[in-house]
Image (cartoon, rainbow, N blue to C red; front, top):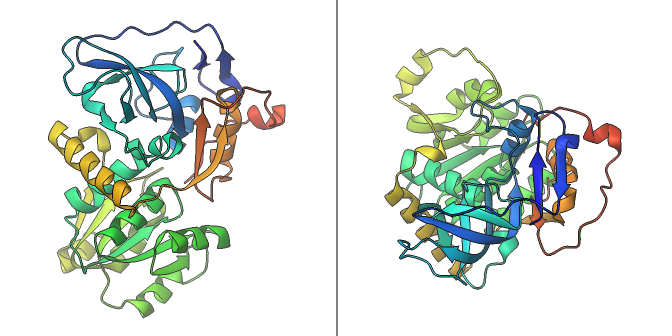
Length: 343
């Protein structure tokens, strides 16, 4: 079995490609999935570098979401059969391998019209965005939504989901390409968060503030969010890379709420609801996951560098298991750098 394996934490050069990895065994309530595609996320680089709160034991196979075809099911599995197309989140064994073990409760049917590459991007970004918008913030049609970081994986998913549910969507990005990407995904108004006084510009366009704010880098932006949130509004913290000091009076005066979003806390029935809603929107065409680049499994180190350097500004980086394996095209000195994305 082919697999990418991290034997020690550190730079992307620590990801090694093998063709003789051990095929994992399934237990009760589990599936063995032949992986066809695995999306690469910033969190993968945090874990690989050793800069994450919950680290796996090394060696480990990276990859926290994917899509593929079920090869085998445990005897007590009733929901799926071998041959079913599925997308999945947080597999028991990593998704950057030919075969992955997935809990039955973490797998969902992949609509026939959705590619494996697109399906592989659903298990983190789309589930997280859905949980933030509709479970934590209770977003409703006609409300205003502000996405601080709308050109990333979760941001783009949130733009599409919010628009599909009838919200008016504002978002930020840090480049012309990112702004256009968010606009193409459906954002009504976009702003460059690298420009001075961009918060004032946003408030000039929407002086009442926002009912829902999705925040991808709270240690940098949370004070801005407190200026932008409407009375009784929600700020959903999805990402954070440090500490920040805020004045609680600003929350009190608007009776606003700051809520954390952590996908792993979802209950089984919430996963089912979120996945069913996402699948319905995939089938009717209101969701269209955006893929930037597809690489073979052997080039996973290159994919980690692309995520770090924000080469993924046109969409998601995906490992396509059907592409022929080849040598890395990234210079060795770049692979040896150990710098996960700041967001």
